Figure 1 (cartoon, rainbow over the protein chains, first blue to last red):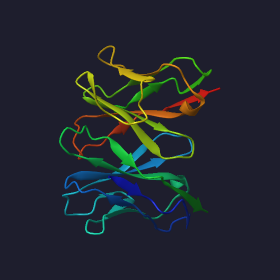
Figure 2: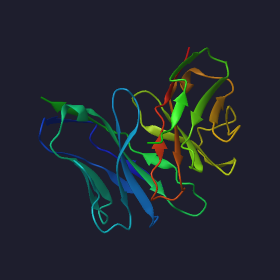
Figure 3: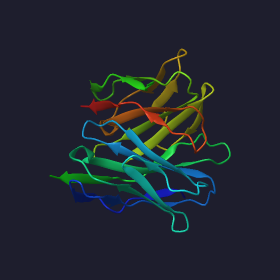
Length: 117
Length: 115
């Protein structure tokens, strides 16, 4: 069964430091996409970064990078130079691409990141 | 930048009442989704919709739930007889293509409170 695991319920990081949020996934499908979303206290879901299963390079988007280790089935999010506005819930999600599927997202339980001044 | 919109932002209803949550997906998107997030828990898939019919649904999406695209822009989720456990944030999402490489764009959510 497809599954996303985020083992860190909460993380603290000092402002301006880097932080890694862990995500492991489980699927036997060869074609999938991995996503990270940020959910601030206001509740909306903000797309951060995407990694495809066939991508050779790790994805980067500004201060966000995805450390994709396919053999380990991990897709950790790295936030560099943390800012107070980064305090939020972060969700890792997977989207499959198998026959007949319309690609719904499977989410992990999330990690609550708190950035300390 | 185009965005998914949802109305209302917050709905309070009494147990047993019907509610309709509304979404306007991004105009050139073809795939539509509803997700639910009970407070403090993870986001769960409810249903996907393509070509005017349900493509997939989860075990949460029972006979009390229905979806509709009544016109070319709106996408609605109806809960026929609400229960206390339906209290959650409901997110609508849309995607240009159904493949895994394409991002799903989420709306801001509707917080449903059933009393």
